[in-house]
Length: 257
Image (cartoon, rainbow, N blue to C red; front, side, top):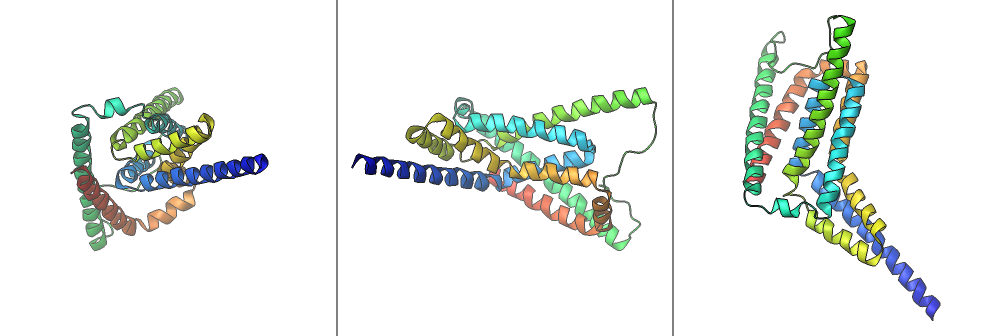
């Protein structure tokens, strides 16, 4: 009889752990593909492609961006930042940020649409937002090394700051309390290690847009074939970019209201 009780408890514990894992992963994907995280993934992709433009620096900057988010998201899941998030004025500042960013994204989308319209009528027309180009021109070796080192460190720092802002500005809209309850449940029925694994599953699922943005940027700058293929379709991409920016801009404004 005791053997049956042990087997039943083990089975229930395993089923509960599986359901908890599926629940946290599902919540992670649900939160990841909402408008605010996708907007940050787009901004990070644009930063990597238009500003960084060096595969190794992109790789290190992506690690910095993701690492900061992992650290902050785990703390968010465990409720470590709740005392800060409930302070008066925090919600208003975040809403103003998204309203401003949404407006900027709509303006950028409008510029892409104007470029598309002008280039469609005249293929020789010069776009306001051009296709990312490889660095050209020669400098002294010493100056070139110093400048590249400085820019690399600057880009990595900016990426880390962007990671922090991405979590800070999305914290109020994430399902952190649902994940917190799931993690507490796992901690109660199993152990702290299993609860941390649940939290990390949520974080890994949530960061998929960031992983995708970094991967796309690395492939873009490593493969000349990909760049040439995209450049040949630049006019179509302009129209797609215009729609994406406008839709995300409107979405962030609606979400902030």
